[in-house]
Length: 374
Image 1 (cartoon, one colour):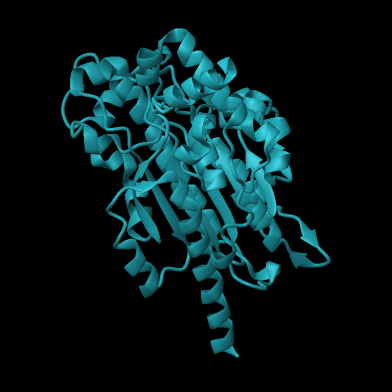
Image 2 (tube, rainbow, N blue to C red; image 1 turned 30 degrees about the horizontal axis):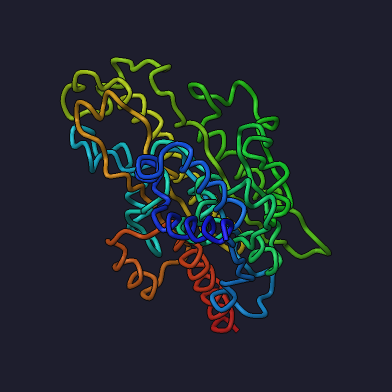
């Protein structure tokens, strides 16, 4: 009887768990909070969808004709110009041009603010919104070690792609070295493949990272004389904080502001410097994919907004949305029509669908062109 009452009491109280830690902690107290979240951690299911994107991908595709695919998870990337008009529009001039010719682009809702990159990362790779993971949304990779997930990498691997992750940081961070092979990746290139000369500020720079991708695509593997398409998932580091550890120069202030830098906004100036390098990286990758024999698809998104406490105190905090685009190298009328609907905010979990749609359109466009040339 006592056990039944205890279980009944748990079921009644667990309804109060909203998976909003600030609310739940106050509502349940410290012990209740830890108890309920602990129970959910061990009991909450997380169903795995096998190849939920099957219908989006080209059926019976010839691997040697598929475009290369690159996706960039750009560290702390958001359009700061929209929040802070004191910044010059030219900071993201290349980004603007790419968006204007993209399959889809716009604002992006992500499950992270200022940190917790893997929450956004896991949502993209699995195509699952944060709420689907329940309590595991707060530390998804620990959960994925116990319950394997079907990912974007698996879907592309099934089409014949070689799948590679490039992240200029130790592969062991967030257990990626153990987890990524289980998530469908053939290779993980980490900080050991870069040098001190590649750094911009505290971390490996975006331009050096783009150079690594370009080298990989130019030297991609060949099997029996046919070209193997490559999927490269890039996790950047340049714009990772703390930004206050770097210095804003007078030249930066002149380059990035319409007028004078607002008082207390050195972090924003440093951020703008890195944002311009991200802009250069995006341009380098589109140019590279344009030159690939089968063309290419480029996905780009920010994992979360940066931490800039003094800037937010002075100019106001951003909404928390980042930016994204899905681009391929062969725009058509159909693609332009799709892109015109991109003004509304997307959830990060929707990006795989858009990526695969852009891939399929690019592949079909190639087949049509080949038929017309016969």
